[in-house]
Amino acid sequence: MSGVFLGSISIGFVFCVVNMILIPLLNGYFSSDVSGLTISAGMLVAAIAGPFIGIWSDIIGRRLPFIGVLICIAFTGSLMLTGRSIAAIFAGGIMVAFCAYSLLGPYSSYVADSDVFPAFP
Image (cartoon, rainbow, N blue to C red; front, side, top):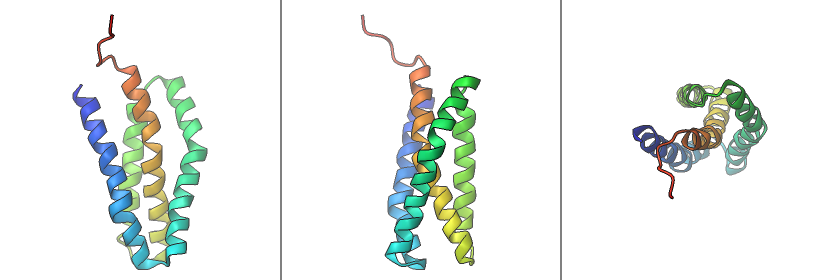
């Protein structure tokens, strides 16, 4: 139960970071069009990679490794956002947006797989 609770908090935190920190940060470096393109590119990569993440996690039968890898990629992307290179900031924004929109699938599957909620008779 604590894993589900902590996962819910972390998913909310990731979306908070994207909406409250990433978008204003990108607007500080780029125009609104380019910052929107950065977020959209991350969402597109997440839409393409999402089914592959789901299939691979179904084959392996475990969800937590995928959640951990996505969190590590998001951390790396947020470190890239602190750089001085425009290309690194653009790539970091894509990585953070990708992870934010990719975490929901494996986490939802993890919650569905774990028997933390008793079945109703």
